[in-house]
Amino acid sequence: MTDIVIIGSGIAGLSLAVKLAEKFPEKKILILTKANEGDSNTQYAQGGIAVVTNFENDTYEKHIQDTLIAGDGLCNEEVVDIVVREGRQRVDELIQWGTKFDKNEDGAYKLGKEGGHSEFRVLHHKDITGWEVERSLLAKAHQAKNIEISQHHFVIDLLTQHHLGRVITRVTKDIQCYGVYVLNLETNQIEKIESKMVVLATGGFGQIYRATTNPSIATGDGIAMVYRAKGRVANLEFVQFHPTALYEPGVSPNFLITEAVRGDGAILRTKDGSDLMANYDKRGSLAPRDIVARAIDNEMKKSGEDHMYLDCRHMDKDNFLHHFPNIYEKCKSIGIDVFKDMIPVVPAAHYACGGINVDEFGRSSIKNLYACGECSNTGLHGANRLASNSLLEAIVFSHRIFEDICKELPNIKDSEAQFPQWNADGTSDPKEMVIITQSIKELKDIMSSYVGIVRNNGRLKRAQERLYLLFKETEELYETTTISPQLLELRNMITIGYLVTRCAMLRKESRGLHYTTDYPEHTKIADSTML
Ligand code: FAD
Ligand code: SIN
Image (cartoon, rainbow, N blue to C red; front, top):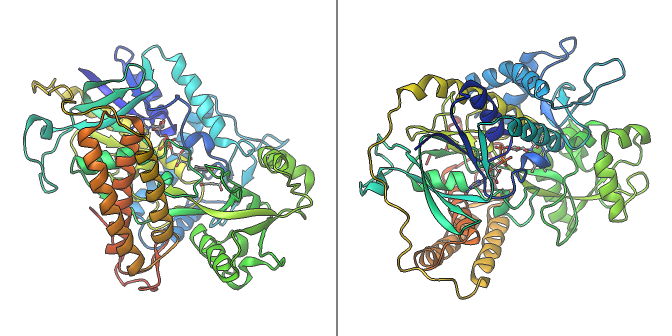
């Protein structure tokens, strides 16, 4: 029996582990992660972390207001206040732990601006902020003698009373988490890890779509596990599509052209060179993401083109090369000179605003189970996340979870329940992997065609019916086949596809990232979609 298991080694999991390891030097802090330790959405973050540091021009109130406007009436105002105000201290901790943010010659932080922000406030490390955050957190975690990172450990499911034979339903009040079943990919054995507390930091699920900025780990595993364990998940219809992923057919994930490029003056254009946003929003290319992504989608549908353009040709060369060296090199590698050519861009699935429902200390509806980072629904983002608020949310909530664990851990006794080992009776090796890979393709097609940027009742119904077929086939496969990461991810992604579609069907209005032509207006009362 361990004390605390953290699932995931992105910013949420690592920042929590570092704190717990310092507070409890005598305890082992175990991180399970399904791929290499650095494989995460965190590693890909470009723009940076939104936080108020320049109090001459900026205020907490302005950041709060920008977050609420983007969230379109569905943010939890208390949580917005907490994240914006506590964020500064948490960012200072990241800096103390070794994260380097770009500075001006006078020593002040260089601040970027992204869509929906009224001020320059985004701390960044060139255009590879996430890489720098992940690097420094991993280095800090490696220094701690009591943090163990088990790579290539794929968590399958949460241990709850269900595994003791008790019937658990979505209205059961006292569901408790006792640990996890995990597939050790090095031994191919399924292990049972019992733990007093479990923290899910498993990230988002962009991989359920054809075009996504998310790496292959982003398959929504944590959210699917909680739903299977009959815990509460919420607001899953709010999938954020980033307006400017590089158009590069056949390449996955799509390389991101950070919004900070538009913050520095780049302009979205149609093929004939017109300002794409001129007829859509007075904030132009820097309007919030939902509005820009929808405008691009609309222009693509109208013109039949498969991409639009981002124009950087007028921008200051030195400044561009200094702030966006990675983007410059990537474009160059495929024959695009950003100072001579416009960059072809498309919207791509980018961020899950909803997830495992948690309170202001990251506690889920399942006892002794926390969720942190992109897999959680804290109420910060509402119907649409403000750019660069997600790294901030992860560090604020990992600290709050840390505080709660410090308080609660001494009160939890070792469980005397006898949980069974994993039962693989009746399963055999799959005859052909093509069934799984083909089902994943089908899932992506369904979600991209029917549950994308613009929705309607007919498309959602179609998606639901087709997903049900995939679900039945996959459950059959799961019952009869030896478990593999591909099968587990397929199963999780189908669950997520179902949840996104179901939440979208329940929302009989358009709000934030959820736009349906059947109900183009807001309803009067904004409420979360809770399953
Ligand atoms: P992740 O960093 O995704 O980590 C999830 C971890 O869980 C991984 O280690 C994964 O392997 C592990 N895992 C998942 N399932 C399992 C399982 N079943 N078993 C074991 N381990 C598992 N946000 C910003 O605020 N600013 C930005 O500039 C920004 N830019 C972005 C650019 C890109 C291209 C992308 C994709 C995202 C960007 N975001 C940005 C969003 C932000 O990066 C993520 O929301 C954030 O990093 C999520 O952190 P996390 O720790 O919650 O999850
Ligand atoms: C970007 O750099 O454009 C992404 C920022 C984010 O997703 O918060």
